[in-house]
Length: 194
Image (cartoon, rainbow, N blue to C red; front, top):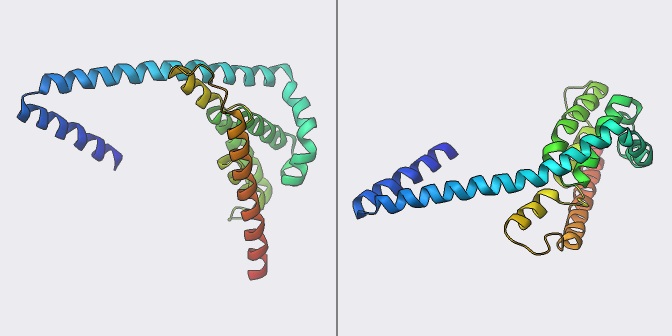
């Protein structure tokens, strides 16, 4: 659907430019916008590559295993079944670490591996509470360092792109708490309906 919307907007812009005699200006604006988009993507790519590389270094150096041990009490409470499987526990740790660093791109593969591990352990046709909890925690995760947003602010010329950290911590913490609380009540309500 979005393809049709964007295609229609481009077509209407070209037609309007041709009717008004400003097709050259429309073309120049389109090229300028494309140039700015490429520059923005390169700026964002640098920040995301930095933090994704850091996450990869943490994995290869074995620090994620130490993080796994550190986060194990929390993960055991949130994912009692999933924490029994070492592969799933590692994926959950990597996913949580990437989300804490604000790396949604790097968190996705680990989240998929964790979801597959949780799904194997649940064995039922419907998603269980742990899989739902993983979805909520990925949707509303606490971000200690919102790398992509800070890279975007830096590329836009912000002198202090990290000054948003307190606001990000508060809002992401509130979002996660609200999501987990809603999930808790929905789980309780669902058990009563059975």
